[in-house]
Picture 1 (cartoon, rainbow, N blue to C red):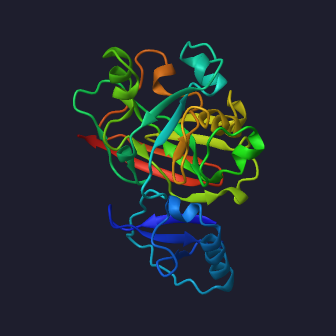
Picture 2 (picture 1 turned 120 degrees about the vertical axis):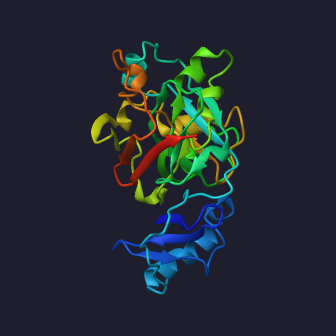
Length: 285
């Protein structure tokens, strides 16, 4: 299933995109697309049954905002330097273990919402990422198979970064990762049964119509299941938590000088095979 949330920010309603591309209202069945739903197999089965029976009312998508596909996100866990080519382009050695950092849940916005370039920013960068949404509480997972069983589905994350904040102001990466609007998510949560192999997905990102990132999840240093299993030994993952699994090569940081960092007025578009497409216009904060 392709689950999503539509409507004004803070007032989104649950919906579903059917196989014909028609938007269907889920409000009569569920309150929201969130961790409570994703760990409730009985309710998910009722949603599937209603979809199969053709009884879900259609929604007029004209002018309807698409919000983040998951509500009430507890935490966003990100993996840095998780593609061989991306590590190489930044001059970093491939890490021996996953590099982890947290992104605040309040950075999450819809896939077509405005992205705000922070005040004082000098080096705002793009990063397309495959995001995993957790469906069952994950603690000390012992195998990749067990990790896969804890994944509710997948979506697209845009892990925007302000590199000057990230690397030139001391401390941790968090300064450059947690700026307002720096995590567009969506458009859909595609349930795990529709993504048979998360290591077989293409990722592309354009800036002002120019292709900048053209990667494939097969280039990940640490595959999706291994990442989820690894994280579960350092923190508990709860239903509705999001794991961003790293970005492929092609970011501004990895380009020759002058590096083409983002500016107000730029337009970024990104897509992952089978998971939909995002588009953001950048404005000054």
